Image (cartoon, rainbow, N blue to C red):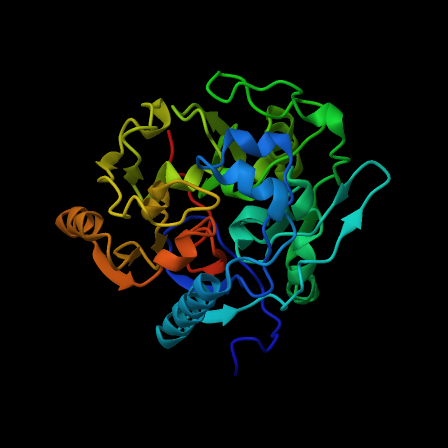
Amino acid sequence: MSLTEPRRAVISSYTEWDPLEEVVVGRLDGGVFPTWQPSMAAVMPPGVPGLLRYRGGQNLPGEHLGIACRELDDFADMLAREGIEVRRPAVVDHSAEFATPHWRTSGGLYAAMPRDLLLVAGTTIVEAPMSWRCRYHEVHAYRELIKSYFQAGAGWLQAPQPLLTDELFRAEHDHESADYAITEFEPVFDAADFLRFGHDIVAQQSHVTNAFGIRWLDWALGDEFQVHRITVNDPHAMHIDATLAALAPGVLLVNPERYIHNDLFKDWKIIEAPEPTLPAEWPMYFCSPWVSMNVLSLDERTVVVERQEKPLIDVLTRAGFDCFPVDFRHVYSFGGSFHCVTADMRRAGGPETYLT
């Protein structure tokens, strides 16, 4: 079976570390620069806002993008060789302009980061209501996959489609302040602001996820899950998986600059991630070098890590983990790493209680 051939399968994924059996890996093909909106200033690296103001909707840098696409394909092939079923979204041209009655955007973004828009909670797929206007239709690249899972027996929830009108965004936002770039006008969230711990889901509020969105998800998932909101020290907060990585029951990898002690993890072993090794001149369009700790657990002992992050590999090896090194720096440039570019649809194991 090819990596792109659709196949019906029931989903079941409750944690970040149970043995991985089936996964969706994103695509950068057809990706474009996001169309600028002011709320992006809170999370973008220095210099990028100016770039986006005139390159929104235009193709991502060709040579760098080509290498990143090969890295993604090689990663998908590696997972398949490990016996994991790999599925991919459709190839989509994201350069088409689109509009609602309230706003217009020069194009989309990409279909590279399924973790941003799909939250798998047990046997249910939740489509996230993301707050970047350019990502409004991003889930369409995954729609055939989602339908096939639903037809095979999976649950399927779509969060309320947001309006993304100006009322959602703060007119004046000091991104060094405690305020977020989005208001509580309507529920919005990126799925990557949540981590799964069996019956418990840990969330951070961020510049793309508001308290309204966290509250909606807690309600929508019902009594099987409890969503806990934690506080982090990150004025540029966007996606929890470059701040926390749940590697195994009782073991948490944390960003030492951002992690704040929380009683949810009072009995857990806390491993501090070392400084990223990315060169200062490396192009980073959408995120910080701390994407280095955006690892993917294949099981409780095996972690996929970027090959050149030697200090992180050493730390994890000393902690008893087997590290699977993979080249991925060119993917870094476009906003994510192994956890971001995947949505694990099936992991062995069922719902348990891991947090006190």
